[in-house]
Length: 395
Image (cartoon, rainbow, N blue to C red; front, top):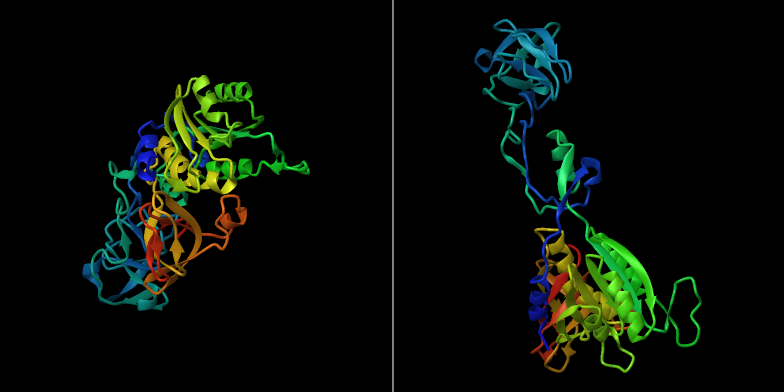
């Protein structure tokens, strides 16, 4: 069996970023930028006041000067004031020609049409044109997921459309005679296809488009037809039927549908019966049927592949050493992945594994913020020992 690291490398070796498409700026939230955006204009576009106060020539203060004009945001003073005069100015207003500093209003003493002003350095409280970003400078690099900060900057620069990576279309297929839809009350031996919802949510959170193609019975011909039809999508996720049982047909169906299998079985728990291959341009993942196994496999293999497809620069979860609250024992040979809650105590992170770690225990996926990795060669971790954790959120 391949190690998790080896399996991940095999998956990512098959990934090529999706092509770009032009999208209106307001529809770019959450999308990954395909080409860099370079500033075509300065930001700010003009010298302006950083504070409410009085615009002056720094060489003319300290002094008491007459206030001869006003410059407000959207109503600039376009003519140069006479020597030894001050201009009442408000935050964001254009600096009047010839004036080079702003004295804060709380540092002044106003008496009628005159104001007493202290000494000040040239350039004080003035935002210079292009101080934030100058024409020709890189505004947002390719591979960045566009959020509020990026969209605000691009709007300020007058960008109306962006080249973003096309969203991968992900087909989700469930296999198993025992599966029923969520609206159906399960009969004896039946289970709700819950992985459909978990996987679709995980796919959507990564900026891809999930497409549920239904439940396939445990039959080779039916599995082959369903998988062959799904190869028109960018990524195919199947759940169940990928082990070695008499009614596990997915691996055979992959081959029959023209999928070249790159790996099968990974030295991990949960999630050992994983298949991955390529069918034409589609990346095809045969995930385990147990819901926890399928989600751990998604996290370790599908998630980085989807991020690579979108061209995202940041693909890896943050990983950090954590102190384990209780001891843990296992046999050597397979890496174990434990769902856990991690808290910060001073400079250290402390992890408490969920009490239920079985591959069918869906409650172990609720209210967790980390997945602990117990290395394949490790057989015992003492209470207070250190293991690595994939952090699902900031701690």
